[in-house]
Image (tube, rainbow, N blue to C red):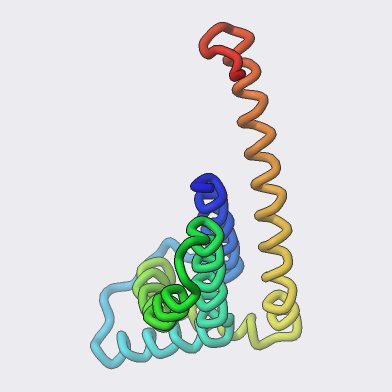
Length: 167
């Protein structure tokens, strides 16, 4: 059962990571000098706008829900009331708040504005619409590929005498 929980965590991580990749529409390695407090606050406000446009809060809610569902499966003896209380304690906004410094670190203010502009186009809106399904399907492929690669590695390790065949 712990394997299922680990797999769920990996899938959630992959989905989150893939979702984040879609945000990277513009990159620039030429970082500018530190900005003033007003400019910093404007950038942070735009990062929050970007996270709102891209549905980061919904993604955070989904991640929390999937995590709790995986834990419920892992620990079926725990009463539903515990899980309800536990899930109510988890705040998606807290996860989103932790995204802000990441975007601040990796994107300039101009890049954030460009990404916002992209997501306000028809193609950007389509990207936001199909990205969750694309992420799920990509995660499924990744898991299948990983399981197949692990099975091949075990067979090779057995064939070369590094490990014994499991009974």
